[in-house]
Length: 40
Image 1: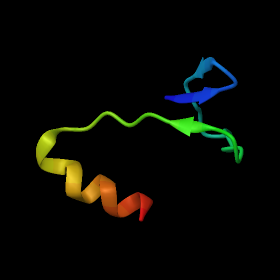
Image 2: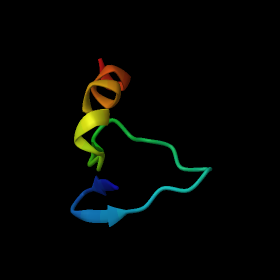
Image 3: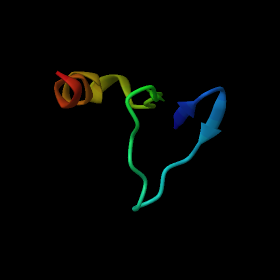
């Protein structure tokens, strides 16, 4: 899910993140290290 200016957006294949977007990621506990590596 992406929060853009207070609006919740569910991106599709054509979605492009903007600089001010906030990304909320849901994952299983065991997958957390893999997800963290995606962002760092």
